[in-house]
Each structure stands twice: as C-alpha cells, then as structure tokens.
Amino acid sequence: MFPVIHRDEWLIVVNKPAGVPVENDPSGDPSLVDGVRYQLSAEQAHSGAPLFLGIVHRIDRPVGGVVVFARTEGVLRDLHRIFREREVEKRYWVVVAGEPPQKSGRLEGYLSQSRDANKAYVHTEPARGRKASRLDYRVVGHGERYTLLEVALHTGRHHQIRAQLAAIGCPIKGDLKYGARRSNPGGGISLFARSLAFTHPVTAEPLVFHANPPVDPLWDLFPRSNLQNSD
Image 1 (cartoon, one colour):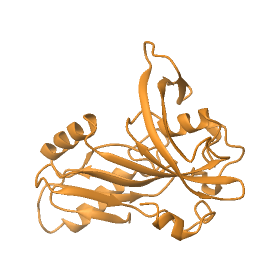
Image 2 (tube, helix red, strand yellow):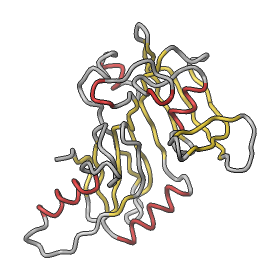
Image 3 (cartoon, one colour):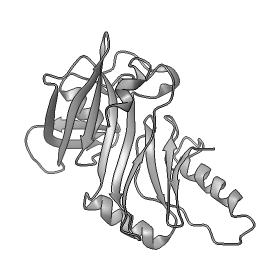
Image 4 (cartoon, one colour):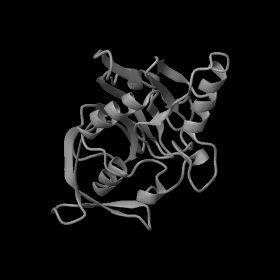
C-alpha cells in the first residue's frame, strides 16, 4: 500500500518510495501506477464504476516523494497542460556532497541527453538538442560531509537536478551515475520530491501537497526540525 496524500474524484496524490518505478519498465519490477491502480480497484470493487488512472508526470526510480495521477481522461489532459506550461511549483530536498559556492543561488544552463547512457550533460551554450534548464537552491542544513538543500525546479528536464548539482561539484549522495563516491543502502539517492503546488483543474482550488521523507539513514544525517522548518 502506497501512502495517499490526497484523493478526490478527479485525482490522487501519493508518496512514492525510492526504488519504485512510476510506470512499468523493462525490469519487470512492480510499478507505482499498478500499485495505486490495485489499491483503487479494491476500493471500487463493489461500486461497478470504471477505473481510470493516468500518469501525469514522473520522477526518477531512485527518487521518492510526491506523485500525482489523474482519475479521468479530461483531468489528465488538463494536468498535462498545467505541467507543460509550468503552472506548477515543484520543490525538492537534496543531500549533496560538499557545499555549493553560495548559500542560495540559481543554476542555469543547457542540458543534452544520452539515451544510451541514460544520462544528462550540462552545457553553458545553446545548441541543437540542448534544452534550457533552470533551478534555484538554498542551503537548509549542514552535516560533517554533506549539505542539505531545498531546490525549486523551474524546468523539468531529464535528470536535471542530478546533473546540474553534479556540475557545480555537489553530486547527490548515493548518485553513482553523477559522481557520488558510494551508493546508498537500498539503491536510492538522497533526492526527495517534497512538494507540488498547482490549481485544481476542476474546482480551481489552489492545492499544495507535501510528502515526508522516510525515517532512515538517508535523511537522519540532519535533525527532523531542519526538514520541517524548510517549507
């Protein structure tokens, strides 16, 4: 059972555990969408109502946090537009090696993607195949060897946070693909989709959804008060 953050007749929001793919992939491992569909089908077994569950957006398999699904085709189209037009606020918590050069700042550049390596690369100049990328960060806490950041993501590029932080010498803890020295237990990385904010596509109500990181060594480097006070 995946923790449900919010549910209404149009959408459902869950807290995805790190290591679970949002959708089915070649690994054949159980996916988030199938798990949530099973949860809903069990609840609706006696109603006879048709079940629809549409994938609105994705976060990387080793990342945990807030994920939204649509429960009607119309809402799926509306939410795709909201995300495409960047009418959504995304915030992440990140544990990185070292420390950024400033306590807060903006990272801008252009990202290219290698599909063979499943990896993104940061560039300073535009070119064909490169996409403009922008995020803001601020330091929230310090550890002996690691720093806790809050990141506001303005463009949702493939592996954007992972690549841009690695490019300034701050790879995410556990992220071997982007330069971390060692893996995390369980294979996750210390990147967590903390919150999503957008306007409800049907009711026009402003929505803000938060997820809490798991209580495990990935996040126990820092006092829980630091995490709670970063919002």
